[in-house]
Image (cartoon, rainbow, N blue to C red):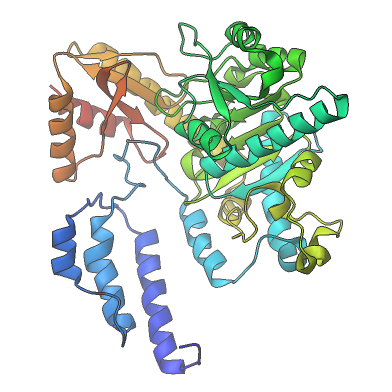
Length: 453
């Protein structure tokens, strides 16, 4: 299997690269859609066999049966969840990363990759106004980013309590119910408790409500506050400035989850919404969401990376050659040891296009979002639930119930016209557009809204 067969290996590699090239240059992109397990069992059959299918048959199965049974998240009318719309350069370079056998966990093994990734992280840190000493690592996604940051927050808080001789073992996280689902899930992994904070009439976490929660439950029991810069469901940006002020007052770690919305830092039209983020102790943003990188990529950044290194560095005799060196080793700053250089596709696209192009692309999606909000307000059968902060618009179709929304979603997808799923908020079924693809046009918006008449 690992021997070199010039003819067979050329065929196998050429087939994969040919498919990748065609998919990267495809225009228009098909939306496609899921198939039933019975269909796939009938169409694909048993794909793992003792003798193997050979490269030709395996590639045929993927191209004609398996791939079409997957939605294209980069389709301009894929507006559900948070889509992924990588630049062609970023997606193409992901092939290079996979082909290059680069281990991205240590400077010793991947210095060039780590250097490039760190420049991309520096750009993001500068957008957030974090100090020159800030740094971090690219991890698989927001869940791992949140978990890694909260582990550091708890480790730091308990070390401070021990040094002060208070005997306290902080076990609580303060967050609103708008925080990402991963915060509750990761708290369970850590055997920590999430203490809910009420939101204001704009659905934001504020310093005033945070202070109430801390005082009611005992500030000494908390080790972190999680604020959000762009909630998944509504795109709400919390009142970061007032939250940061309270965190400084109580000496609490401020983690800002910007997995989706953090990319808005690059857009001058909404940058003011993020005021206060410069005080964050840790911050995440997923480039695979609104910074046009492929799955899976989350930038995790610390104000004081040394605190993360202390909390996360794994000790073992065979790792001494790495952990005792002075160079930047990415695995010291998050959960996990084995690491793909997943930040390289973002770096390559940034290097190719320049940061101004990113600003322009993000602003273009915001312009389409504002158009969508205006169109919803103009149509008498629709009603916006909240004016968008960023690029998510949540709205209702007057007179519809849950079954109507689901039937509409199913019809659009069956026709491979668009992918827009329902959401719920305070017991009501609604729908939403998440617009992060610069190829999504005002015409796309109008075409989808017309189907709701």
